[in-house]
Image 1 (cartoon, rainbow, N blue to C red):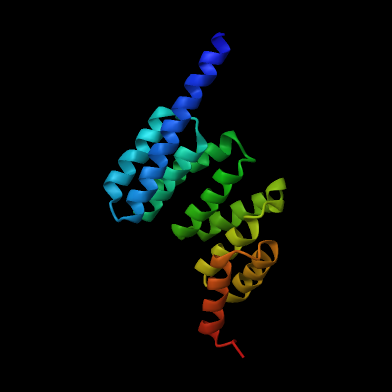
Image 2 (cartoon, helix red, strand yellow):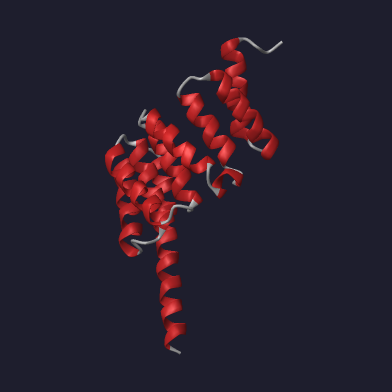
Length: 171
């Protein structure tokens, strides 16, 4: 009976956290970063060990340029759970967006030497890193791999088309 009550309370807290995360993402998209951060912080406060809440907060912080707290939180998650795909790809994205390309390459090497290399997000995450670094040849190669892995990936098609237009390789 006690286990059932504890599980139920955890589910309720997780539902509240998910609700706060969704509100935070919506507010961030609407251009209300302060409110978005406050909702994301509420989600983390409710369940501090809930990785999606911390990742959502970090993503909002990254969009606002608060790289240090985002990197610190994501590095802590990866340190405690090295095989969490959500945290690992978010950390790679954070390194890339903060222009810490050496750290991004180092983390990409760690990911590629783990089981996460088989994750369907791996080719796109790698392509986005090379795209941000303006290594167009590598970015195009990885975007093609991302499209082969998921033919419905609109973002990969869009970025590949941008590279082709940028480099005028569309004949």
